[in-house]
Length: 104
Image 1: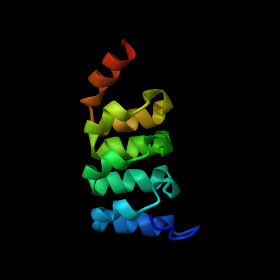
Image 2 (image 1 turned 180 degrees about the vertical axis):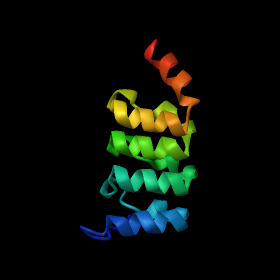
Image 3 (image 1 turned 90 degrees about the vertical axis):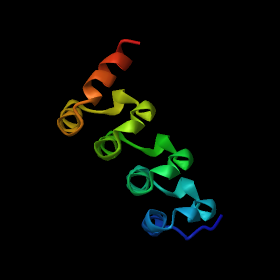
Image 4 (image 1 turned 45 degrees about the horizontal axis):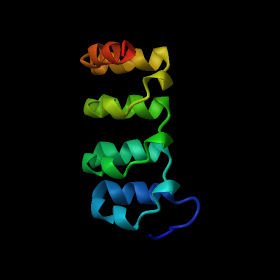
C-alpha cells in the first residue's frame, strides 16, 4: 500500500474513480464515508473493498440514491427521517425492502 499522506484522501478518491485497479495500493482506512460512497458510485465493482462502517447516514442516502442494490449493506437505523424520505422519493422500491428488513 501507498500512503499518499494526510490531507490528500480526496486524491485517492479521485484516482479510484477513474483507475479502480489502484485499490490494491490504496490505504483504504484513510478514506472517509464521503470518499467511499463516491468511489462506489463511480466504480461499484470496488464494493468488496469498501469499509462500510465509514459511511454515515448522509453517505448511505447518497450511495443508495445511485445504487439501490447496496441496500443490504445499509444500517437503516442511521438514516434520519428527512434523508430517508429524500431517498425514497428517488428510489421508491426501497420502501418495501426497508419495511421487510425492519420486520425481521
